[in-house]
Length: 215
Ligand SMILES: N[C@@H](CCC(=O)N[C@@H](CS)C(=O)NCC(=O)O)C(=O)O
Image (cartoon, rainbow, N blue to C red; front, side, top):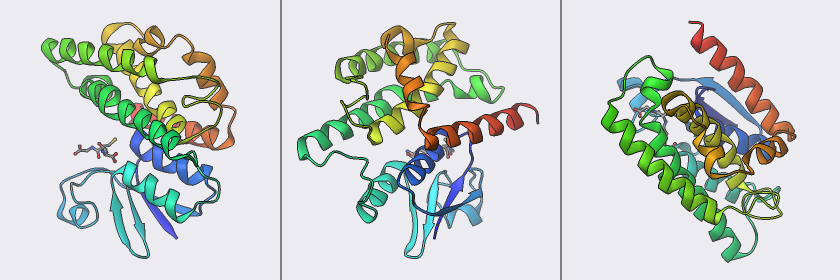
């Protein structure tokens, strides 16, 4: 049985959790915080979460895990069968992660962890986020799903990262940069939130966020 390790407030942890739920793959969860402790470094090479433990060994990096799960559980596919469409789906995921979420991530210290981020970093992150979101707007179809008429792994990733980027940009810049660049995003998020797997991840994330801020 797969053991998913990490915390429910992490969008990367929730990415793997959502994929497991959508594909109906049995798994257990273990609450593990990222750290540089030797014990954790033996389980996850950079001490990051998420990682999974399998009968064959451990795997880190959410996208690697996602692709592995897709290969070993091809039933209930989350990628299109056609090679080009599959590549378009991966292209969306790559843009969401590298050109959107990673820039917003530079703000999380102030948004979630009581730290401060310099004005220079805030300005840089805003510029890069604008470029990333404009690029995403050129690629995203929202017809009704992000890659077209079928729900795919790109929707799982988009749903999680849009939530974080919205929170971060509202708190730091006073504006929801996702909605500003992707005007159809509210109805898209509502559509995704009709899915039982998405609802389960949202409920667990909500409880974890409440517990985190009331510590
Ligand atoms: N590229 C990694 C990102 C994972 C990641 O950044 N996880 C965060 C929590 S959301 C973490 O472990 N941070 C601790 C650190 O960066 O040392 C993935 O896709 O799994």
